[in-house]
Image 1: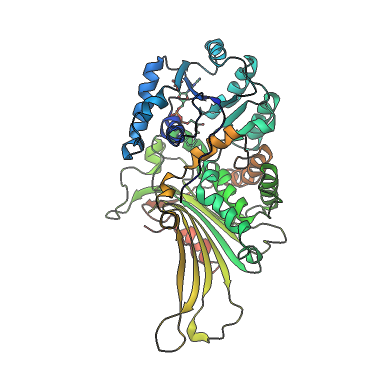
Image 2: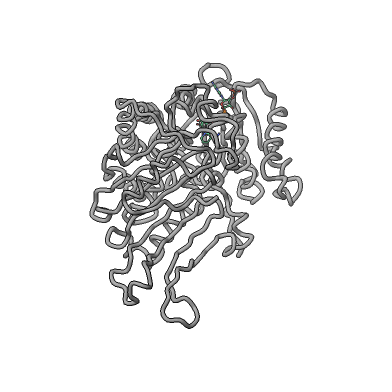
Amino acid sequence: MVSRVIPVQAFDLVIFGGTGDLAQRKILPALYRRHCAGQLPDTARIIGAARAELSRRDYQSLVRAALQAGDISAGKDAAGGQVDSFLARINYLAIDATEAEGWQTLAQTLGRPTADRVRVFYFSVGPALFAPLAEQIWAHDLADDQTRIVVEKPFGHDLASAKALNRTLASHFDESQIYRIDHYLGKETVQNLMAIRFGNMLFEPLWNSQYVDHIQVTVAETVGVEGRASYYDKSGAMRDMVQNHLMQLLCLIAMEPPAKFDPDAVRDEKLKVIRALEPVEPHHIVRGQYALAQEGAGGDEDQSYRETVGDPRSSTESYVALKAHISNWRWAGTPFYLRTGKRLVARSSVINVFFKDAPHSIFGADAGRHANLLTIRLQPDEGITLKVTIKEPGPGGMRLIDVPLDMSFAQALGADIDDAPDAYERLITDVIRGNQTLFMRGDEVEAAWAWTDPIIAGWTSRGDVPKPYDSGSTGPGDADLLMRRDQRDWQGINP
Ligand code: NAP
């Protein structure tokens, strides 16, 4: 199978925070891979910007090192000379988002906006700089109505700050120019979730509370908060993961079919899901914070959460598990269990859709209970599995077993999947193309905060302290109890 690569139009991309971790690990390698795929026109220019006084050559060396630390060592430079031709596109300007200097040079470098050249400003800086950057771009007349801005997470700290940021951005840019990035939406399998739901006749008729028993969304990480401690301790898993990534996955699972795969049609449906979420009962949510690993458990025993953040009394959660309900005709009575945590036993992002048992078993009680399970794996090993019930082969009567109908993308699509764009590649090309379908709209973000804020306020008013859990475990025992009270178990973290 040969994937089609359609070049994007000419563009200038300014990466504010061009020397930062995200630029080095994700944005620049993503652009490099699209360069190697032949998707970037010769005239495309990339300009890194940050406060550090670097020459163009210094910055090119930094980019080269970033690519080397990434995947070019794994053979991505097969054509030879690709790195040099990529670096030839790269420029650098020293600019402080909060100072007046440097902006005139950027204006001269970019020239006047023209209709045949897309202009993108990527805000890969700390969130406190999002509003100042928007204001500087506007004050220095760097944008026209075709210009796009890409805003990283976190988008606000709560509803009030998200509204304030939306207001500031909206005073300089139209909503159609604002790309709030959530890289989970750029993942191949997440888009496949929509393809599976709306491209097949098989699933959609069953996709409701009559046939679905419950749904689990797990985003488990093995890493702790190292390197992000000061940001994370003010944020926590609810703000850092649930309010954005898990909510976005929930929306795509639960939304009604949009009339077409069009940015506003999709985002209208996602918004309806968030607005239909019921407030979460305090006993339907578990917070956890990682402690040291059990001796011999094989986990990272270096530091507990509190040691890493340097606060022995920190009550920030590194784990959340909750049961959510969507009050609408389709999902009334079907619980959605969401959980995410750091320093867990395995890295795994997975959605499990548990269908109900058949209403009557013609095979008798001995055949046991069997129900279909649709598993959508986001990472690792992106793919989809449907567990179906069949007869166990051989003589001995009608014994039933569950077998997976498995579609690992790597197996099904062979080498092509290795060349499939990763989330940042896809999302950046979508920005250049002007396609907002996989980006969050301002009202979605606000609605997500409106649901999240009371949960966090409840913890604060009750003086809630997260439950400790061992590093390298599956999380706090109370999260298992949350499920067992409903006669269910978590699935989705396999070491
Ligand atoms: P980082 O490593 O701390 O980099 C910050 C960048 O901003 C640096 O290039 C820094 O360079 C520049 N900067 C700081 N102050 C500036 C100013 N006043 N004017 C202009 N540039 C300034 O941060 P990061 O991890 O790359 O994260 C960037 C953004 O992406 C954050 O909003 C973060 O939440 C988000 N994000 C990051 C990740 C990730 O994996 N890293 C994942 C998702 C989202 P100078 O100090 O030289 O100015």
